Image (cartoon, rainbow, N blue to C red; front, side, top):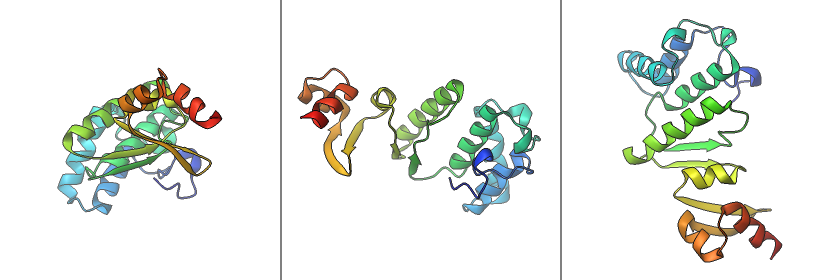
Length: 165
């Protein structure tokens, strides 16, 4: 998910069509051209971009660029997903889409590891969590157990309890 010096297009090539972009990333990550074409088509459909495959990244709205970026991360069906603050700055609809997509990955046996400051979101999505404060691991384990052990109803409250203790 590097930026390639194009933060506003979020690692997408501004002049390249969305479909070609996804195909390119797929091939780059080991898919055959035919597989990459199929996967690009499937992800465009899945993310509500079926009609936008021929649009260049720079012609897409911010939300649709975010969708293409999400598709680019998933097009080659990775064995592991590591995402850095993936929800930061996402529009709410894309946020829900990403949540759904991440929920689909886990049953496929794909571990999804992501960092986030949005604890309500983490609580909603994650099975396990590690809470780090100033480089120190202050809590780690299944979300349910952490909540139970801290007698705090939410992770945000648990975090406050741990850090102020």
